[in-house]
Length: 342
Picture 1: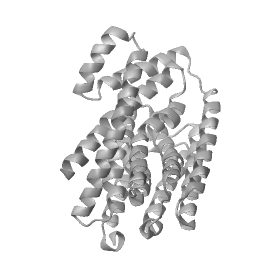
Picture 2: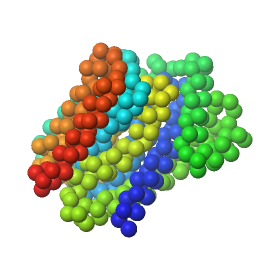
Picture 3: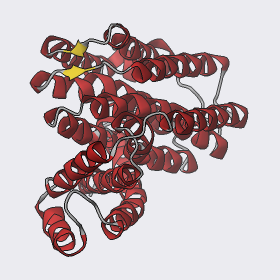
Picture 4: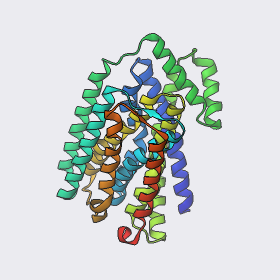
């Protein structure tokens, strides 16, 4: 039953997270906003919903290691795995000036989180600080979006690509979407009905999937005498990063580089500010020694790993992608060593 709960929850998170992303991105595309701005805000918020649901549920259930480990592990997976795997097939260009500013902010909030964790448990005070920074970040992003409007031609191309992505999310989704698209969607335009259905189904399914994942993850940890933090940093973190991975893979395949990397950078920012902010408002989050000795530093190093490429406006090449993926495998090996799990 534990395995069924975990597998079912991860599958539900993947499908509903993907639906929420498509609906949110379609909504933003109708407003004619740049793909980078969409990726850094709307798509990042959508793909971070599984992490939010799991961390909040874990905080309510008194499992702080899962709440914190889910975020830290997800941020590590987002860069090393979610950017590494697509780059193995399609190098990801990082040429936007706005991306540099957002990457710098991601690095800053990662450093802030480490400092707060060393000061003690994440309490309501720290939660309010993180939420305030989130509000400032979103307000700045909205202002920046005004300078990144698309013309009608680019807007049509973006929405057309989104409709194609929707049709490729799986057979079950495909049949339902095609039935709706054939009746209600004009060429290169996702209808309000499709957008509304996708967002509604995503919002309903994500909390259910989160509850199943938390129950399955904690049950698995107890069955094999593995600390909850190790499960959260690995299995749950990978599971909740699946929406980011699927989004970045599709974006890289379609050569939408800004969407691929913007999704990761925005998601990492939101994971720290929104998810840990809300979770610590619900209940204090003690920080285990293992996080201070290894995991938080790996998260910071992963964030630093993309800074030179973004600063030089270069590309995450296949070689860099291979290094990222290999680094992630080494990290997974390290967190299950006796000195880390005890």
